[in-house]
Image 1 (tube, rainbow, N blue to C red):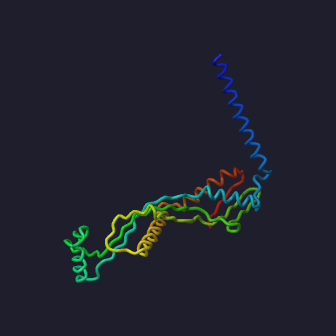
Image 2: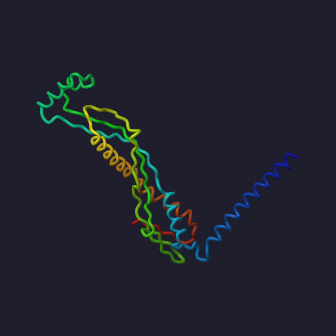
Image 3: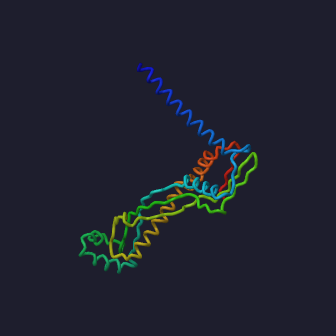
Length: 213
């Protein structure tokens, strides 16, 4: 009896899976004509391409150390400046070593970047015939780099620093993140992701060629 119930359950599962498969097949078949998927420049088509581009977008979180140092201009300024630090316990080691550093600010900055495609209605092109589909997309690029001041940590701070000095370090951190993106080859990875997603979504029997220009 127990085996019979198990058999009936398995049969129901197979029927459900088979029904879903048939439904998906009919849906895919209905979207194709004799020459494969019909691509048009309708608003729905444009929005679909944008959604595909969003799927290929890479989010990249980074934590960088940005540092700025101002040094004494000459030996006289170095001696005078180090003597002025004697009242500061933190600066006492600079006095003993006659440090050349007048002041220093080191921040640990967290940021998040997005790498992908900026697609508008007219900056990509699709050509096709019965054998081949050609996609011409703009190259992937850094879409945004957002720094979070609330999560910024002060690792080291000597001397007085204005808001302008801190903002300059934030700009420096943005440049470092952009270099990290280049080193990680995220531009190439986004384009590779676009290739994979586009081919999976189309499921077209024709040859698909994708160019980034």
